Image 1 (cartoon, rainbow, N blue to C red):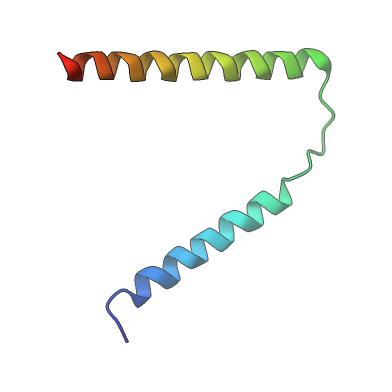
Image 2 (tube, rainbow, N blue to C red; image 1 turned 30 degrees about the vertical axis):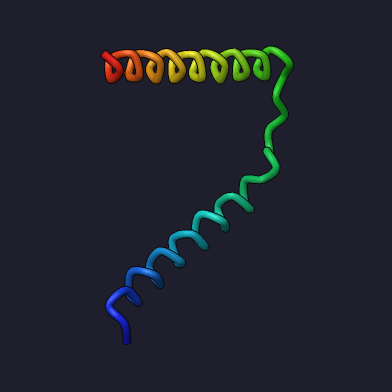
Length: 64
């Protein structure tokens, strides 16, 4: 038995667990109104903007 075997089997089990959760929630059970869809889209865009600004600030600090 190799040294990495327990780590690989644990990681594979965790990946399978996450895949099972993703399969369970692949289709939403609640209907979303257009307002909720718009709010979620705007929050996603806001988050991507913040991540972009954070990356820009990090790169500008590292370059100096």
